[in-house]
Length: 490
Image (cartoon, rainbow, N blue to C red; front, side, top):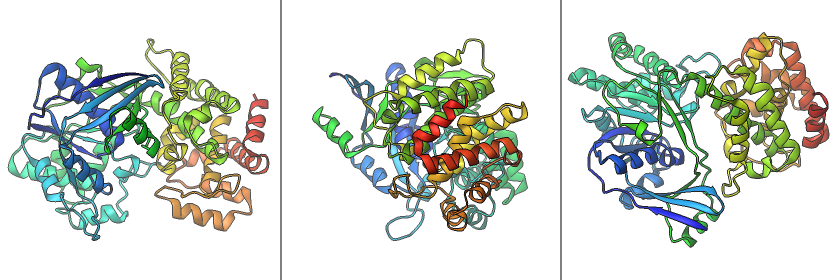
């Protein structure tokens, strides 16, 4: 194996960015761009404070013990690896529930960091559910217990929107200019949706504060792309054998993309020097990635997991499944997109298939399958709805929906059980318990969940019938039978 090793720059001590959501993706994506930027430019004003809001206090503490340095292993393939040391993170904090069931161990320190004049950008990777928005209509879920808690006790926030509102309130009161809020989560119009969550929560507290945020705070949109699987024991052993034993290491593919709306009133790093695409409108790139890459991932995840397929690599090497994913990309996702003339969607599809086939990544389908109720509206259903309005059918999406419904039962087609990790898991379990013996009522119960499925799509008889037929075929004839029916229907 060819291994290139790149050491981190010395830390500057200057923190200009606070990041909410200290997970693997942040450490392998935004932090890497910033590390590369400061190595190239010598600009030390953009150090990062990264915080976890609900879980993984051990990671926060482990990075502190390591002096905030860790390794990113970037695999071009199984024979080409770059080991990149990252040192741009200069502080880690935890504001969630600790071992004694208390909230907010470092919450005040995090709020102080957010309110500090030196903080000019706040980035987020808190997943779709971390914004507490209804996926179907985009409104803030004011009845959610976490949001209700932030409304009742605004100075002790537990959510990302709550932290942003309290920090902005402190800056406003102190006469400090606001920071820019940059969402890096996989949501359409992620900047606009973040703005919606923050302003709606601020309105519950102080209309004047909400008006100030609406007028003065920038919420640019962004699109992020890099495959970053969850680490396994085998991954740690593989890195240790290469002399990179690191409990905080992450692995990723070599490919990386970041498209950002260029609206930063308080200033920003010169990201474009590291290949970040600073643009006026992110929306076409965002929708392309959500529907083609993320939508394909979800299709692989639910169909593959039901058949006991473990990883993306294994799934894309299943000939019928690969053909289905390609068909979904080219016949359902791509026709729903309006892209600049420079983008060839057939080439993009081929590049995605090649990335999925990277044999050095063991991206687990169960990881991708998490939080489907929050992801599928933008990955599948918005495109299927547009196609339905134009009189077009979406058989691959219908099969995916059928697989998702069956997946939420918590048992694959061979009877192997697994946990369903989704904010609506309890509701799913209740629906399966009530309707599990009647596929028609079960499918309709899922399709009429209007906080997941757009009502006009659920009311489309052809789409609903396609989902039901696919569900019945999956249950009766398994994955191969369902894929055979789909392919014969072309």
